[in-house]
Length: 74
Figure 1 (cartoon, rainbow, N blue to C red):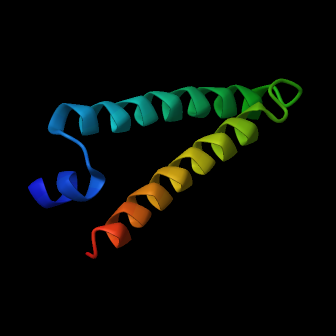
Figure 2 (cartoon, one colour):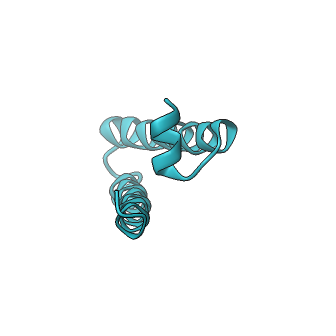
């Protein structure tokens, strides 16, 4: 656990907050997609847009962690 937090450059609670926020956003996305499945005329692009935005943010976070890792020579 300590190694992961060190690589992420975060403390325990700081790190915990990020995945909890992501989980909340995924619940919202799931709800939007569920509604769209029943009513295809609603949220025609909303779920995809939300998911793509979340993916982009996660990719940026990963890239930052990888860049920091390379700076530290790990």
